Length: 289
Image (cartoon, rainbow, N blue to C red; front, top):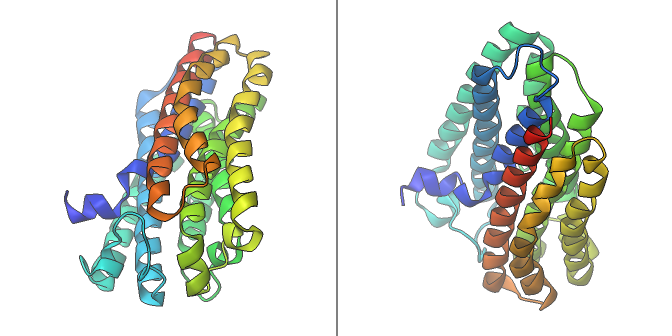
């Protein structure tokens, strides 16, 4: 696999794809002119590019701090020596540039308020693991993921279609954000020993292994429990319940107390769950709009 594709962590990208699908679906039936597809495409570019930029910054920053030396998960570019920190920094800037270009096009079409949203999203991605006091090292990563890969990306994708926020978009953002957060929790559960040794005090390190496993299961369950509420406005949202079998593999592995490298399949399975749930949710919400 190409090293830059590897560094972008493609298995985690459902976290940026799903909110755009769900948010665009939430606009179906409410947009007088119908869905403006180029705006949906630009929103997808913005979302995915921000995540890729964040992943590269994470790779660069953790590599510089030496936090990746004892990792058991997917290969990191700087930590493994596949790329220099300067190269990864430039890749992060390139991804941020792609996001900025697509975001500016949306801002011209929709409104300048999107510039602030995009800047905040990029800043949040940077300060997650970079800067003098990265908040990802202080146990706030889950909050960042829920807010930006849940609420902001989902509701923002509806906003670029309707020029306004809706309760439906905010409601849809909840299960989307919960599963995106579950993806991070699975990652941090795997890395508890190496993160603790490196002084990286993620939420998983702070609350410990048992509570982190409980949190993972609660996040996955919460996504499905949100569906009946969403169905009050869009009955088709219940279609996402068909993805429940995809939840069995990661939940079982987490509950069976898999450790280290044995949790990598749980992370991958959570990504598949998020994608399957998101596609079905978007389809159901759109079809009943």
